[in-house]
Image 1 (cartoon, rainbow, N blue to C red):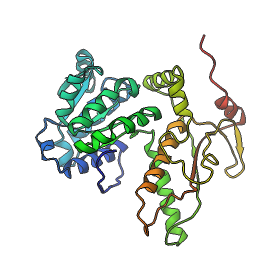
Image 2 (tube, rainbow, N blue to C red):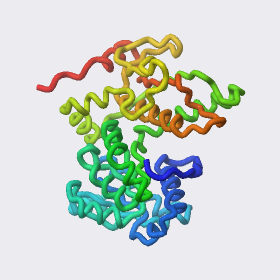
Image 3 (cartoon, rainbow, N blue to C red):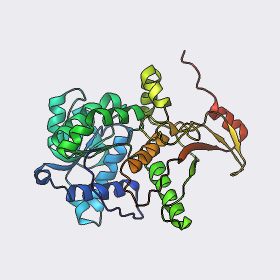
Image 4 (cartoon, rainbow, N blue to C red):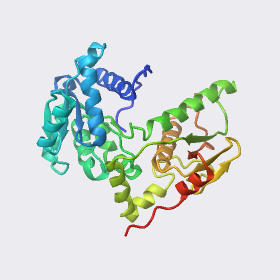
Length: 337
């Protein structure tokens, strides 16, 4: 959403957030809007006191102090949230003093002031439909670039429908889903398709491609992710959007449903010789991959190579260690008491 401009990617052996910061620097550094350079901050991290926000704040504090890159050490970074006492406590915990800004998610005047103060706003405040929607409105109004770590497909649909025109007019980049949801899925799929296109030796690539993404996921989910899931489960309209494979676009071809359905049962994969199960994150990752297909098709130039064919299909599955584990993972969650 927003301005269309080619930005060069540089992949380095480092943490993922550093790569994101390189992209942020490229976007800000090449912006035609000279007023951005006069803003108080390069980056404001909103929702800094939550689980993921704390990790981001710790990382930013570390690289600003110790990076060998001069442009990283010179970044003007501020942290923001709804509670000044929590922000002050966070500063003590990470041992670095960032400038602190407060803005309630329902206070548009405060959010506009925050957006005007920075070139880029990173939001870690979820559920995003509840706590970041107005922030995107503010950023798109004043030409501030916005990115987040959300995994909520209905939220992305809302951003497209409500803020694309405003962002395009103000010159704001709105770039959601920049965490584990959905960077590995989206860029991994694109890289696989580009490699297949290169190896095919055909001028316009392959005519039909099926991509299956197998994930071995370990660990626990954060409180914000759980809250997002509860919010969707309690709203039938949001649940219907989450269940729609094409809520973000990509419904191309004669029979778009074939090959795109979400995995709903445990299954033994004869090719990989392992048990697989439904992957909850597929309900946003797969939608974002299909949106990339949609945008490539929409902006495809005649005569150029397009790695996404009209018969492209994509699915994600969780790898399970045993049949019993796969069946447990596929079982519906217990009803609340």
